[in-house]
Picture 1 (tube, rainbow, N blue to C red):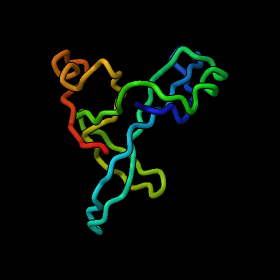
Picture 2: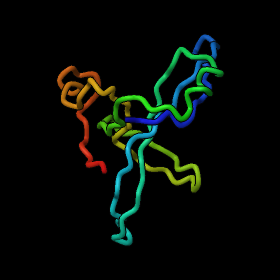
Picture 3: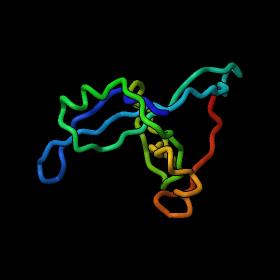
Picture 4: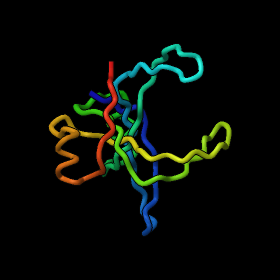
Length: 120
C-alpha cells in the first residue's frame, strides 16, 4: 500500500493547470554509510491526476494498493535543496499499481530495469 501524503499544482505547455498526487511508499530500514547505524526512511513518487484541487485535498491521507519502486534511468543532475550540492543520480522512484509487478514493467519495457530494494 502507498499513502497519498500531498499534492502539487503544475502548468502544462498550453498554460493549463493540473495536479499531481505525492505518494509515500513503505518504511525501509537503511544502514548509514557514515555511522553504520540504521535509520527509517520511505520513498516518494508522484503521479499526475485529472482531479481538481479540492479533490486532491480530500485524497490526502488515503491509502491505495501498490508500491513505490526504484528504477534505473539515464543519469541526471539533482541539486539537494538544503545544501545546493549537485549529485548525479541514475534512478528514479515510480508508482507501481498492485497488479503490476516489477518484472512486468521490465518485460513490457514501460520503464528501464528496476533496482530491487528490501522493504520492512
